[in-house]
Length: 102
Image 1: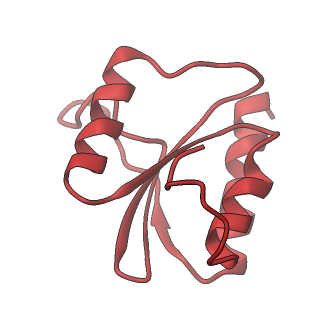
Image 2 (image 1 turned 90 degrees about the vertical axis):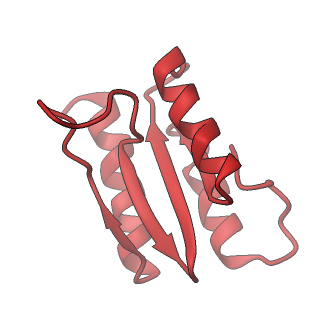
């Protein structure tokens, strides 16, 4: 399993733990480039999660899609091995202010 696949697996485990609807969008052929790795709906809130390994950075296309999600009222996360716990804190602690982005 690649390092990024491990991050995705950790995020999926967390989403399942909280019974959050999610899917991995297929971007082959007719899909849009830059769409987040995981798309979710949590408490009526649209979420886009981009998973990166280590210090991986989002591409310009990924940042564009994440910005469009935020502009539409959704929240976005860029998650690596170190920030999975921050996502869980955001999901469970109403006082944890991560502004929907990590």
